[in-house]
Image: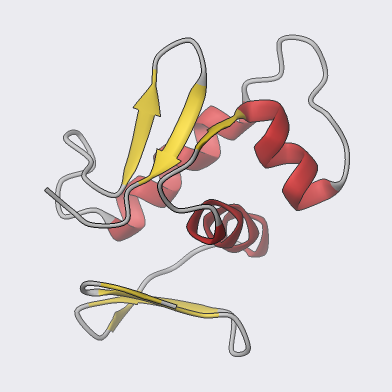
Length: 100
């Protein structure tokens, strides 16, 4: 899967930005793939968890937010102003097809 300078190799389970490998846990890789496969769609935290683990989040489980922050630190040029994984307030996240 190729999104500009971001490349996701599902077979090798690697992620690179500008040909530089990014360090992600297996779970973070699965989250990124789930988001990328639905590029342009806003996904709730429950939809993301369902896609990755086949179950819904527990009440008040914010682990997805922590993982998204770590994924951003690995793949974004500036994780404080993300251009690829965007937060949609009170809803969830969207994987931008193209960066700004």
